[in-house]
Length: 142
Image (cartoon, rainbow, N blue to C red; front, top):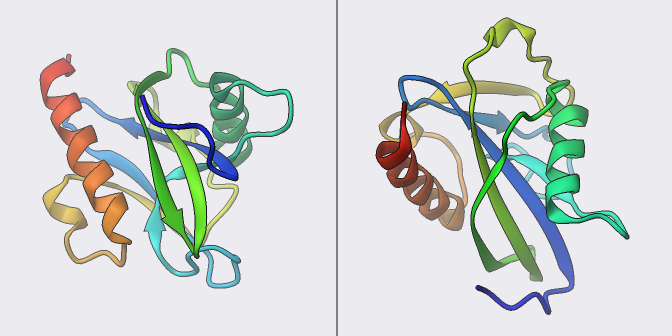
């Protein structure tokens, strides 16, 4: 496990489908962190919340989706905009109607294979996370 001494604590969630496609968010140009980048759904953990509670709240706020069985597959410390961040990475298999999801934040979204993400504007550590998630999905996929 990673240290949890980072000043900023966040959760991210990546939904994936039966084909191993992962849902990513295209961040708005006016967002204070990583404007215009492709990234994950999620956000800061509120005071008194557990990472699991936070990821459920974030999925509902950002996708209007109630997570069924989010799985925390790893934690890591990263630096974003010169700020130390401790991140919990969750995944969940999504078998529902994709049209039921509603984009509540960001300028766009899409379902991508690992290969499809290559031309997307992403920060390096998010690409590493995607590789880890892809490997996890390949070993656990239904």
